[in-house]
Image 1 (spheres, rainbow, N blue to C red):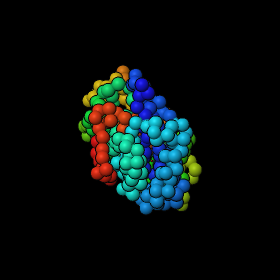
Image 2: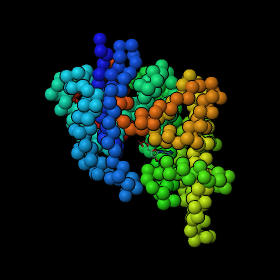
Image 3: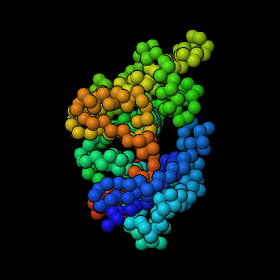
Image 4: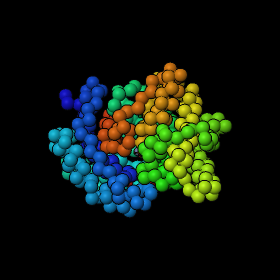
Length: 342
Ligand code: KG4
Ligand code: ZN
């Protein structure tokens, strides 16, 4: 009994990814390979992901990514038990590249094909990395997403709250742009913030005055923009220290909001584990705050390795395996969805 081995394919945003994951019969997981071919350099000059450029890059890279994943895992198509592919949400052009390849492979091999919701991939990652049992609480914080999910089964998610405007990663990227820092902005803003005075600017903590777990980040971005423009109007430009202080004030506001909303989510859904996923989970200051909130609630805080927090195909292969074990399978009529809430 070799368990179940799935190929995963992920092309929903700006990473072309393929991976081979095996679920052992005892429920354990092995990531046999995980290939991520990024496109950041193609989009950097535009200050965001350009859909046409992403679509073309996925079409060019996906065959190679799949071959590389199979070869790094030392498996052939004949060793697979199924193919999992991201069917949404995301950019249609990229999603189609992945789905067309998955359909072709499934038709050629007779393997079952399982369409996966990208967000379910993130949400099930704690089971792949740490064999976390249901139910648990999940905070997705990336460039495109921000939501609290109660995860109760491979296809049972309850959204406790989500952003009503921007995602926090998007806010980090916009702040970086305002301050002429490179993209993607998160790591740069974090580095500057570490050298800044977080007491100099007191930016708003949006929606903290309202009950519940919804979040908002666009007003915060506007407040930073206004503070920046005031300094420029007064002094003609920003000093290195101004930039650091603005980053520190911004990051402190994001961290406060995420910490308080996480506290409320844990109160509403007192799970033994709170896990994070998404690029913003890389932020050390934010992680430390979430860890403290979890400690206080008596919950375990889990941050999977960064490579599995950000977009990858191992999480898609795993979510496909879990969905398949629950009876899920798709056929050639599967189509992609740009919007697909969990
Ligand atoms: O999950 P991810 O790789 O891609 C998606 O958005 O799906 O997340 C990327 C986002 C970017 O907005 C990036 O600026 C942000 O995560 N990010 C960070 C940090 N590292 C990456 N934000 C804050 N602090 C960081 N250290
Ligand atoms: Zn993602």
